[in-house]
Amino acid sequence: MIAMLMTGIASAQLNLSYDAEILTDVDSFSVTLNIKGWKGDSAVFQMATTAPGTYSVLDAGRFVGSFRAFDAYKRPLIVKRTSVNQFVIRPAGFLSRITYRVDDTFGHEAMENPVLPMSGTNIEKDNAVVNTQMLFGYFAGFQSTPIRVTYRYPEKWKIGTALPLKDGAYYAKDFDQLVDSPAMMGRLTRAETKMGKSKIEVYCFSESEKISADLLLTSMREMLGAAEKFLGELPVEKYAFLFHIRENTGPIYGAWEHNYCSFYVIPEFSPDRASSVVMSIAAHEFFHVVIPLNIHSEIIQTFNFEKPVASRHLWLYEGVTEWASDLMQIRGGIMSDTSFMDEVTDKLQTNDRFNPNVSLVDMSIYSYDSLADQYQNIYNRGALTAMLLDMRLLELSNGKMGLMDVVRKLSKSFGPQRAFPDNLFFDLIVQMTFPEIRDFITRYIEGHEVLPMAGYLAKAGYTYEAKAKTGRTRNSLGVFQAEKKDSAVLVTSIDPGDSVIQRLGIKVGDEVMKL
Image 1 (cartoon, rainbow, N blue to C red):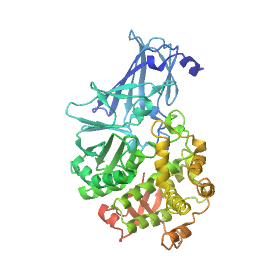
Image 2 (image 1 turned 90 degrees about the horizontal axis):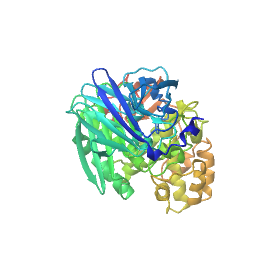
Image 3 (image 1 turned 90 degrees about the vertical axis):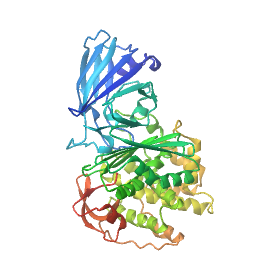
Image 4 (image 1 turned 30 degrees about the horizontal axis):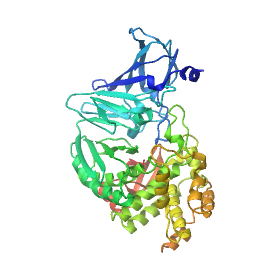
């Protein structure tokens, strides 16, 4: 019924303009939405239940309070909160303004569905973090309506975001782009460079001021150069790295990728350690400019923020990206063959800790609920499967076609504005490659057969010896003995021979996780 009421309003006639004020004294945001052109009898305002790339329930509405709606004469309208994330406004014929407050999420210890720092919000005296899906909402039926955003913050602060700026405001073509564009503001340092035709920006908040944007950019230049060489050219005109570096991140930290930027929450390591961590994580996150920016299904193209709907192809978005980011570093001379095989070994050992009877497709489809505890394995089994798929393609083509060749073909066939059909993607891959690839997909991606590591690694000149589970695990920081502890893993002993562990100073008792 609500959808029927909305269809009579042309999206182009609706003008939406957000004003978000950062209230540093009370750790909350004051949000005003000015509306012009609303003509429906009712309005349904929706906060995000989830967001692309989080694979978790966020329930942004639980942080929203003091929600009020007004007509053009500043008279209050009736608002009924129908769920944690939804507000119904009636009568809405003269709807002109909505106001509400939003609490920040950092430090909010939710027992259920915690918001990770990479996808949350934060306000402090000298900085603020805005992951936009936690701050802004949209009207049901108008997800594709353009949105204007003005941020209000202390005069001396700087801001970093991928959104285009015009006349003091930021513009998003729709709600999807707004959510795809987090913002960071405060006492920031900034650096930029040019890679081919692409402008690269780095913004950094460092709590101790030990880490700067210039330092981080210097540490990433080699990776960016390797990416340009690997891809031929970077497929974006502009890309922003947003780094939030603080002494106490809590037990979980990492990054969240977006199409034209990535946002990082990282502990306040020494400059050398910070550079090492950034190189490791950023290589993966930056490769998302290929997948899913240029290769994604219709489920991601127009995302369902109200109800989680999982794509079957998390193995592609994260598993293939993890594999490709390593291959990119190998070909760029950043990672040695020995280091890569250490990565493979660690992924094999970590994979052993997860349920072997879960396929990559099921891991994708049920990542929000029944198989949420298997999600992390997408970085292990997903990457290993991508490696074997690459080897199988090379075998069938006599070395003329590998997985990256398929990725490039898919990028040209689809791209940022054209999505592939979620349920037909495997057929497309088979059509582009060989009939034998159907068997590989059926057995190792749709099915959960044990990966034939020994045979494939032998073709590459390596000997594989399966061993019993050791309890060793690897996040993007190193190798250690660990046991699961709530949503993190507890380090119980250290591999003294692991150089990454030595550089980063991980010690027994730390809680860490790759995200």
